[in-house]
Image 1 (spheres, rainbow, N blue to C red):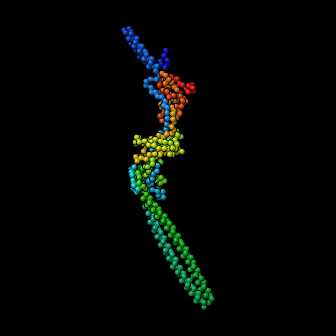
Image 2: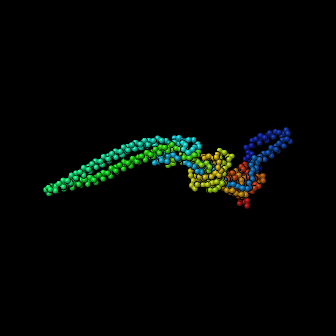
Image 3: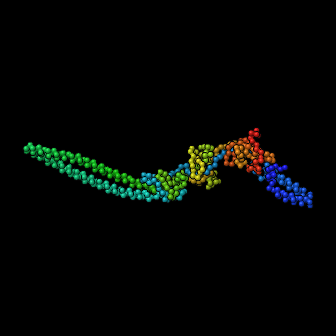
Length: 445
């Protein structure tokens, strides 16, 4: 009797077997010897074909554990940037001018090599131009007001001085009357003295009033002058800000567009904020670094000083080397990313004139190096529940062998227990894997 699994494999072919049997029966009556021979061959072929589920076939790919050095790496994608650069700023006086956002209306192509003082970009001047015109009108008004206050003060003080002179002469006249009344009646002499005292008091009061009017005029002049100076300073700020809306290169170098908070480059139409007025940068191309982001699963493996192999997407045949210089302590949520990532900076050892900011790099960070260990391809490892196993060739059969794994990289994993260097493992699952025998590590010891 065939095994249930073998019967299930033969069952779809039973109608064909019946038709072949009928043909064989007819043929047996005519040529018995040939018929017996053919029937025997067909029977052997069927048995071999349908009983091959628990054995290896020529189509199975077999591998043996490799013994030697095993490298544990973390592969990421990064972007080159200069380690140091000079910022090309927009208007630094925009906040002082009361302007908080500016539109970028023109900018030279990215990658342009410029000299110090060359034109780089221009911001929308409509708002600052309106403010400048309003300031000019206010300044004219305050200048006229200052002139008017100065004339009023001059006139007031001139009248006060004339009045002071008149009161002085009136005082002198009353003094003469007093001198002449020495021979008059006592009543007349007393009246003259009273008039003189009154004139003298009026003159003294007029002198005090003149001092007060002078101080008052000075105060009015200072108030108007303060407003005038304030408006002049405001207009100077507007003029300086207007000039800063035409942005020029602060030094020689290659123009690289700055990035906004969301990672997008600033181009024509972008909004420049007064608290972050960087429009572009002039990077120092002699020292470059790759900025990459590592997921929270692998970040614990990364540390400062680890060696890195880098490849440029633009030139994969140019190998570069580097080392990890910075690992962020706090994760962040990047655009179009489902999980938190941590920023890692990798310093590029080589200095190459072909390296440009924003070039994409493939970074292979060496996390660990293990010597004299067994390793197998990840494709040969399978999991069923909590058991990790491989399909191992055992004579002419295949068994499920439980294994204990260690460190792994993108292609292979270290095997701590369960296989030897001479074992042969299947890369893919054989037919009818549920029918295979499972050998546990505890049972094999």
